[in-house]
Length: 220
Length: 269
Image (cartoon, rainbow over all chains, first blue to last red; front, side, top):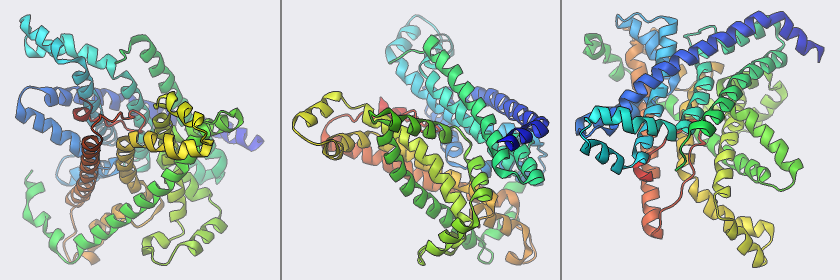
């Protein structure tokens, strides 16, 4: 038991800096995922067929490719094609674009849940299509999909470990854990604290989204 | 863009047996996924039955167990088990693997990977199954009980057949995630598709003089996953439509508990 605390007190700087990197990685990726996700969802519900198709191809591609393969393509493949990509760009862009496909799907189902009557009413009041989306449909769609967004954020926290475990090797919690383990060989103790770190992040996200859901969600 | 479509950069694909070599690696991933899903379904069902138990000393520990494994990154679990599983277990695994299994799965390292995949996915599947069971009207259970069925009979003939049917779509999307997650075992040096793709791009031996370009090789690997996963989701949609036509009802479905929610709204509408 005392060894457990010893490992923590001796390697607290590594663990906390890893946790901070993981947090920033998830936060930046979430912003990217939201922006791209909204765009793709808008394409998928647009009343133009070829726009739907583009959105569909994006979603089916990014949802079905392993994140690890995306990371290798971005970090190792693209530089050889003459596109230099830094660690942070590769990590956040891959995690963001990957999650965007899921967010787009969640938002799309939210948009459909709003109901045709609302769109028709807004259009008949003379609002343009983009305006109808922004003012009438999306605010309601967001509130319907809060639970889905919550579980996607948790999935993102867990997937962020793949960035640190892959050759991108951002110094996130997983990467730091591996280094401390390689230093000390106290596998059980080191991984225990890594697990605690990840649980702090995922459980905080769970509680935050439970609050948002309680406060804003529309149940259908 | 020129680099991407330049035919000399695609030459590796039909040179020697590169493509076959990668394809065989991909087969290892599919096998790991298949074994993983079978054991995850069994363990997941057990955990789900424990979680819905009325006895708190059974349901509480099962709940904590599930919540912990479900909220940890899979790659962390695999890495830990690869380091921490005692040699004697691994030896026992290597001895116990049936001989008809492919060579890559005979490796004793695979034990950690499989354990990790099963621990994580059984926890996720447990939640899916539990909500499938709980979504049934309680009248079903009460009617079964009043007909004199025992608890086991109620579960076996009334509750599970209906509850589990509702979780098929969610289970398929979890299976797709599991399939993608099998690439993570490359971190503990199991020779699956990522490892083999690495071989093709790095060693000249496989390719003669020209090194295979990383970008193109991994695009091919990604496409393999897209094909298989798309086929899986199409299949599940087909099944659901057929089931709906056969029973003449709209099947309620459980969703939102896969670890990456894949809402397919065109069916829900």
